[in-house]
Image (cartoon, rainbow, N blue to C red; front, side, top):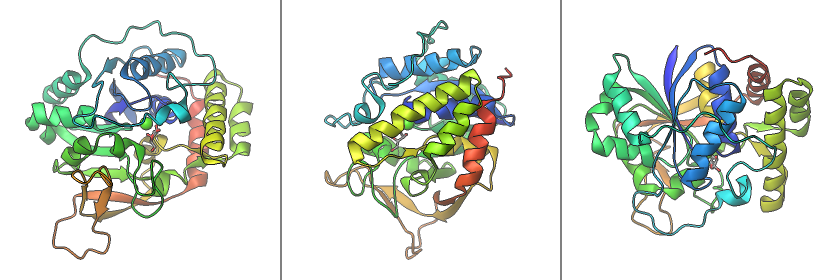
Length: 314
Ligand code: BDR
Ligand code: CA
C-alpha cells in the first residue's frame, strides 16, 4: 500500500485524480491538501471536499493551504477559462457536508510526515506552494518523503500557458525550484505525456454507460473540460493531466520516465517556471528527477473506467 498526501487545486482533472486514488486498492490517502491554482483557495478546498463527499469518501480529510504563490505577484488566472469561475464548472455537485479542517495544509503535511514511521508519497497536482513552504518550515521532513509525483512542466512539446510554460509550475516558479532542488526522489509528469493521457468522446460515452453515480459525474466533468478546451484552444480534447500521477502509482508500467538533471528558471521573467532539463546528459550534474516520456493511453483509459465504478472502501 502506498501512503499518499494528495496536494491539489480542483479543478476537473484534480477531482478525477482524487476519485481515482480513493478507488485504488494499493493507495491509502492520508489527507488532501489544497492550494490556489485553477481557482482561488476558498474554491479549491471546497471543491475537493465536495467531490469526496459526493463519492462517499467522507473519512479522508481536506486541509486548506496557501492562498498565493511564494513570490509571484501578477499572473492571469487562466485556470478559470478551463475550469470555470469556481474551478469545477459543469455538473451539479452539492455543497459539502463534511467540513474542511481548521489546521493549515502546510502544518498537516509537516505533522503527518514527522509523525509517520513509514515514508510517505506526496502527489502534488497544482502549484507547488504548499510543499515548498513545508520544506522551508521543516527541512527534516524531506527524509520522510518516499517520492514526489508531480504534475507539471513541459520539456519536449508545447506549453499550455505560452510556448514553453506549463500552468502549475508557471504559477509558482520559486516553489517549483525549491521542490526540484529538495533532494527528494521526483517523478515529473509533464504535458509531453499528460496531453496524450486523453479521453476521446467514445471513451466518455463508455464511462457514462457504466451508469453508476461516480462514473456519470466524471463523464459530465469531462464534457465540461473538453468543451472549455475547444473554446480556448479551438480543439476538443480531454487531457487528464493530474490522474496520470495516481495512475502511475497503480501501475508502474504505465508511464516511461528518463532520469535526468533538471532545474527551474526563476530569474528571467520571460521563462520563469520553465523546466530546463539536461536531456542529452551533457553536464556532470547528477540526475535529480524522472521526466515522463511515454504513456500507454489505452491502459490508462481502461484503468480510469474500471476504477470509477468501484465502490469506495475506507
Ligand atoms: C495543470 O493545470 C491545471 O489546469 C490542471 O489541473 C493541471 O494540474 C495542467 O497544466
Ligand atoms: Ca491541477
